[in-house]
Amino acid sequence: MGENIKTPYFDNALICKNGHIINTTANLHPEKNEQFCSVCGEKVINECDECGTKIKGSYVNEEGKFFPRKYFRPNCCHNCGKAHPWVMSNISAILELLKINGGFSDAQLENIELNLLEMVKETPKMHLISIKLTKNFSNLDINIKQKVKKIINEIFSEKVLENFRF
Image (tube, rainbow, N blue to C red; front, side, top):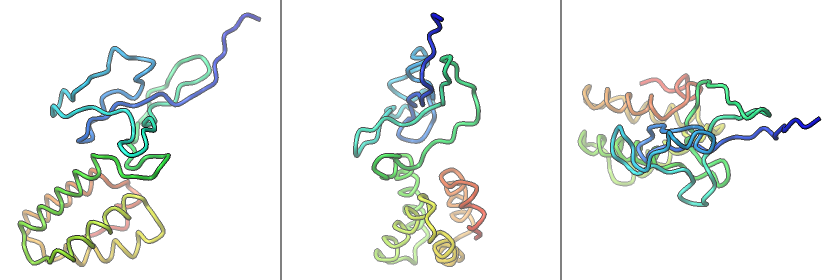
């Protein structure tokens, strides 16, 4: 009877502010933890900047084992809903590219930012917003369009990308 069965749980994840996944089992395997990202040098976080809730990592079963599966980096905090820093830095990069392209007013850029944040959250509005953003991005310089597409592919889920064509 002396079995020590634990309750399954989600371990904590460590992710740098640019979105590089450092460790999805920060408590179970602390030897993999880093203070700064070995890829980009950015600070590594393990909690939401807004509310302090730990970022969910890999699922650990009753025996204390995790089964490495594809880890999907969360875009938003599961407690307060705020977008994580890697999402905000990617959206900022898109906005900078749009400024370089030219042809957008400050109000249009602000609206595009709000629409991108809404798309990240995968709300029912994503179909409408994808059409709006597609129109916004249709006349971009080809080089800028390619860079924007690359960033979009990094932050949006496949479900969102299915609705987003430009």
